[in-house]
Amino acid sequence: MHDPRCCVPNCQVRAYAPAGTQSVCKDHFLNFLTWRRRKGPQMFHKYAGMTMAERDTIATEWLKTIRLDEVPPPAQKA
Ligand SMILES: [Zn+2]
Image (cartoon, rainbow, N blue to C red):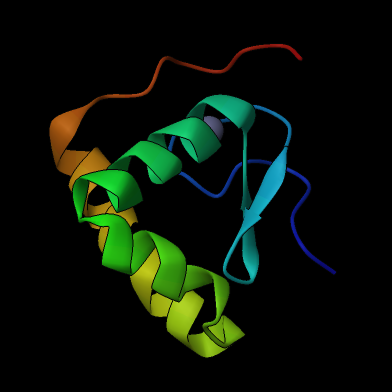
């Protein structure tokens, strides 16, 4: 079973969409989409054809960036 909460550290928001084998909340999912777009259209399209293991690698890479870039707000009630 997956954790029904966002997999981003310190984020307690209910999961909205998958990021690899994990799940993220709506805000973080949009952040993930933006991050992939920023990496270029190639990456954006490639992701769709990736295996779960490959997506996890991408998601992990992204997670590292948001941990540096932004401090998520403290626990929010959904
Ligand atoms: Zn989140």
